[in-house]
Image (cartoon, rainbow over all chains, first blue to last red; front, top):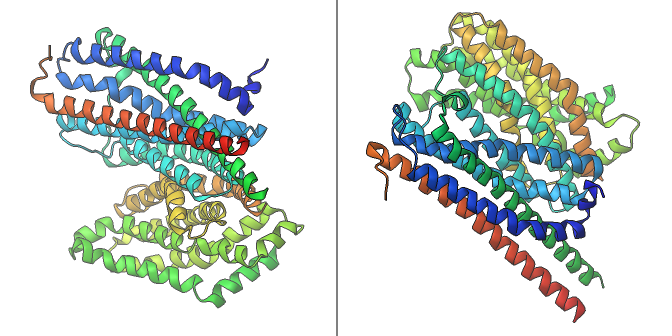
Length: 242
Length: 218
Length: 50
């Protein structure tokens, strides 16, 4: 029994149908624990006051915004190399979730930045990179939507995802370079790994777990939707032929 | 290969769009900017490198869908797919033709338009150099975008949405080099980065463009 | 029960509200699309078999 067995749509449907409720419930529970714990039962940071509570949404969504793209990259590669339809559909299913995660990261970041840095938006390397990532997601989704033939769309979007990943990394470095060129040494980004004390860290872990599980549940659900939609259109085409 | 290049160049000249339209667009952008931001020459000379780079980039973008759309419609691409010439080479030639008809005229015209925006005299050499190094990358990346959207009707807007994020690194390094040059600062680091991107893109991206075209022709 | 958020209450509540709206949005959208796809497929299978 290898992993590739689940590339078969029937097996994938059976397995994902069994896993989906579990991941959905687990994600709901950990999100509620993490957010309630974080919102109600953590102290204020001495420098940032109560805005530190935004971390429970900002950090997990930013993490997921990048990891969703990574997942799309892997599934795109699997589609290009092994041509499993489920893989291509999973990439398609993940993209809107990535958009939502990127939006949450950007919005919470802007709201957090307003009281802390005195501005909603700064052309800080991290912020700028996320905006570019957002544009990549939009282009990817638009390309899927524009092409009628499913296999062609899967091929083209996979290649776009590969090329886009390379350019996203290039942009990240370019943006770093560009902003340092403007204000030397000025860094607005928070080094969360070092600055987070245990009190804040434990609920944050729950939130991250919740976001990851939510993503898994949503990807499974959306991939099932895509598989069903494709089967429907296949049956429809057969009906027209017969 | 030569034949294909000559054919593409001839078509671009005869169709009348190639040289003229991109340049005219570039000129219009340059003329419109002072209307938008005001006629103060100090402000204009400060933003001139960025404006000229953006104008060149947009002028490039405007002509991208011509690279492949006509060949797609009249079936030339299907013939190319059967030709002994590998698709990668054909795509590279197409990008080269696009650069010769759009990128190169922009590079040559840029100093003239820079006069309109009061670019400081130290900025001319870095501006031309950065455009010369950067515009080939714009053409090659644009060919990839054109190959992606060739089968889509009214793909122009989608083409822009796909290609513009890919232009980010080129624009950043190119405009940064031009800006540093205009301020009289050493501009070699962004120029080297720009050259790196351009050569990397020329070496690798034709494979992706060719793969995409094969999928579209299938 | 409500913790004292001090002068940043607007920012914190705004961030939570915006994020929760977006999260619920993507979940509801996914569930709705899933229901629709399922219904369409079931109808198609019924028509085929019936």
